[in-house]
Image 1 (cartoon, rainbow, N blue to C red):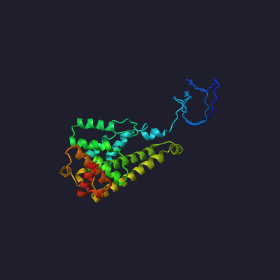
Image 2: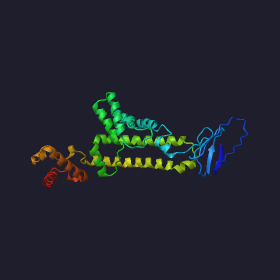
Image 3: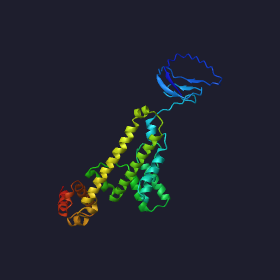
Image 4: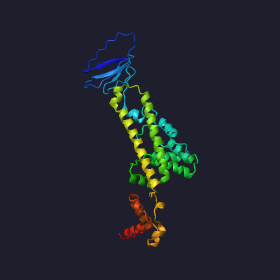
Length: 297
């Protein structure tokens, strides 16, 4: 291993003197007008193939280990997805639908995907579950977990209440468990990668690898714990989180003169929206009054 400081000024004149009893094959591809001042670690086998346009030297003569933060984080140098999936399955509770959701949640995504979306995963998972002849209820539950696993939920009362309204209480409970397993698996994978990285401490520090991954997963876990606490508070307080928990229904509105169909659905949606923001409004008499005011407007 040699430590070389290169400062190349190329004037198209190459003088090579080799005093080795070796067969040397020298292929030089120079892009001139570059000044280099690099410190490299080299493993020499005396066969040189330089492409000076890049800071690395290609060929069997020099082997340059380029520390690429993106390749480490995004899995281009690691079987990131496979290891993460297995850890996710192990981390979630022993429920069939939850474990299948964690097993399939990254299917249909590229190996170096950076979290661009879940549409491909849902489509691929649906195909797999259909071929395996899953019953519709289980298949639907698994797909809902995958579909909303990446949904960001602010740990605030209204945000959590609206998330529960959007996906349903049962799916939301599944999501909390799946999110925890996902974060746990990510943290374990990061720890394993750190243990195997042989790059220098200076390269790791320069890349921001420790700071970025460590901070993000810690923040994610903290955010999830706060979201879980808000959700428990909503359940314990008995807040309305769905139409069936609203203290008024379609029959009540028909008796008030509303036309059956889309009009009733629109009014109920409006009332639920108000109650989500102000839970104290979930009172039948107040809701009747609000419904009539909405009709007048």
